[in-house]
Length: 172
Image (cartoon, rainbow, N blue to C red; front, side, top):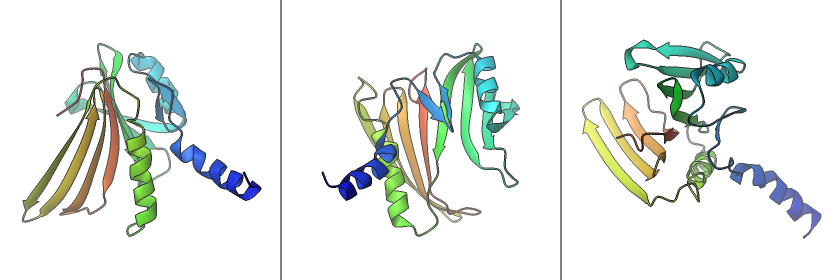
């Protein structure tokens, strides 16, 4: 392997690296379903701003500390004081940056490879109303899923990619 090719491979390897089985990375923090609320909130509070979502039970919004505006990084949920749900956002390149967007899609979907002994399913939907035009695709493998949404809503046209884990199985 030439030095130039080796350098190229080393540059792209981190983009394809996956966390170990059961590990959920939110920023630099490694979480696992079943951790206590205190453990998770203490870990995340060093790097993120945390806000409780009172109307949804025991769920917390995980945002960047830099702001405003604050960047939504994840939502974590607890059942009986234990981490039971994580929804992590994948940052997408600027509007029109097709290569960066496609790279993000590939990185997100690669997280599903080998992560579950459950078969995977793919669902797609389109919604069209006067102030809303959305297309979405979800790929679910047991308790782990990737959700992609693109379109135009009244106040936003940014595509989103999120990755979810749930102790209770896929959320509908």
